[in-house]
Amino acid sequence: MPSPSFEQLLRELHASLTLRKRPEDTARLIQDLYAARGTDLDPATEAVLAKAAEHSLRNLWHGYTSMREEFARPVGAQRQLSRAADLFVSVPDLPDSAGDDPAQIEAVIRRAGEEIGRSYGQNDFGLDRLDRTDRTAAGLGEISKRQYNKRFRLLRRMEAKLARLVHEQRRREVTITGKGALAHVLPYELFATDLDTAAFIAYTTARGYMRSAFTNGRQRQVHDEVAGALYQRLRNHPGRTCWYAVAHVHPTVEVLAHMSDRELTQLLVRWNGFLRQIAGMLEDAWNRHPLERDTMIVRRGDDSSTWNQAAQAWNTARAHWFALLTELGRDEILDRICPGKVPRLMAADVAYWHRMSGGGLHPDTYVWADLPLPWEVLRGARECPRSLVEEVCARHGVDPIAGAWTAPKPTAEVVGFRRTPELVHGVALADPLMASALRSAGVFSGKGKRAAAQEWT
Image 1 (cartoon, rainbow, N blue to C red):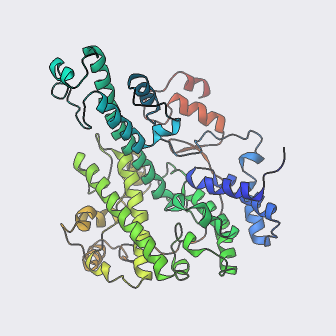
Image 2: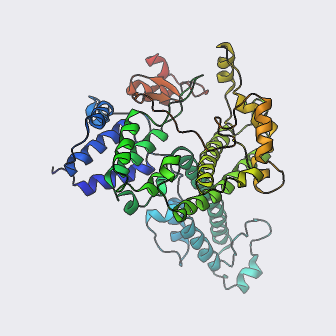
Image 3: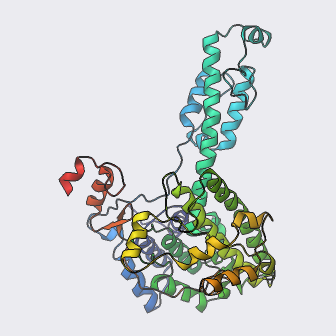
């Protein structure tokens, strides 16, 4: 089999921005890209890439990971569209891709509804169905009541399916953005402008996509020694680096200083819109079931998955928004509107672990509890100027600048590379085959374990 071309490898690297590849595998792909281009790497970059790629799946004897290598995709409406094509004359057979496209699904529902005299949104089975007289007047006299009801029920289910699909697609987008910022929306043409730029973005994104581990300490930091070496190559060749693309994932002062006001404004507008979208999700989650705000410990009935995904996305968007405002010289806006960070919900067992190991609630939790809710601040219902945030931080002994409460997030220090563990519901295991078996058996999930688990334990 012939070796893939440079462009094929580069497109594979670009595709990884929407996947969940292990950083080791991304490092191996970056190695292949530099080799295909014939680039002589500096010793530091070559050494750290080799260190990471040593543990890639291509270099391991089993070549297997138990963890999903993409973000879970919502189940589309392919089955419902196929059934609609059988029941409605005006609905053609559509490709499978249509089942993931809300616009095409809605168009089918509307077109099929016209065949039975039903308008979009008429879902009440008791009030919105046509009786025999109305069906005859609408030219549906040849359709039996049973066949009419079957078509009505299908369209009603399709509308419900469409609403769920849109919701789950939005949640997936929020999850990806919270972990990898705007990497997943980078067009190939911008990503492929410069190889060093592409390598840094792809590896940094892979690090950001890593799963959280069950721990009472800090999670792994994104900017490790591999990312540091790749970033140094950007510094060494600033003229050819696409800093606008880099700012989609790494908005440090140094990166933003290379950008024009127009590029900064484009990103600011995008993040401003995303902040408002996430604020709405947080508010909806809060209104459905208000949280224990003083502790942020999960209680029965809390939707911790939705909240934590939205909280991480909010904090990512907020960090980019603060950095862009500051670089544009518009940080006086924060003097009037300075929405706070949003903490994630903590499991009760992790909170207990913190207490038993001599720790306690993170100081940021106390600051969050004393500030107006962020969505109220964004829509102008509550005031939260920078002075208020500084006052609350001082009350709880928190540095508002170092803690990124009133200023952009400080540049992270480079940490050493550590290989990606196999995680089963956050618990690290050494063997991916055992991890797969334990996950299937329900171990560490909080649910009843199946008998298969006993064979492994």
